[in-house]
Length: 237
Image (cartoon, rainbow, N blue to C red; front, side, top):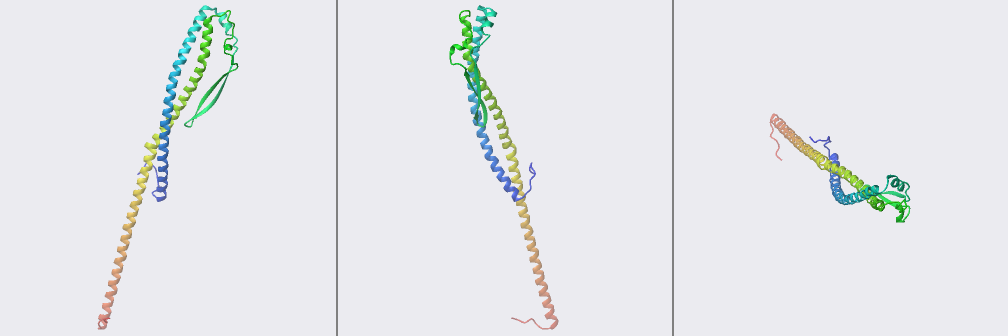
């Protein structure tokens, strides 16, 4: 018996064959999608690895500059220098479709194009190391934003790869074998029914033939008795 309940009819056989053909085609498409997703995912992972190293190096430089600046300046002066920022930023988020996966795309814009607006203080009472720290943070900020975008993309792609892999495995190891087994079962049942009908027809034919022979014998026997009792021989034609 197959793993799924089916009626052994020709209509059900046709329906299952159609479903099997569609499932095989869908399985191929899903495998192609999975392979392409894996390719995209590996590209994103390589980009993520390189960008993360760049961001970590930039943060280390900025942290080192801030450490030196905090040693050269008083904490009150350092806090006062960074208390009121002059530059403001805007962040827009759109989506990009990668193999039916909507991944975020961040766009970073500053209010002013003047590069000097990143320094919210005068240069007379501050250390040059503080300038270097602010400049390093300003440079690494866009890389950090890009890193966040890439990491979210890799997470979404990994989830889609896992879902696609489960669907491929379900079709390959469960659905398609079940339908093939059901088709084989229905085909065997139909063949068995056809053989049974053939045997039944042959038996009916034999029975009719026997009845015809018996009737012919009975007719011949009645004719012999009739002519025998009258004493006349049967007329030759």
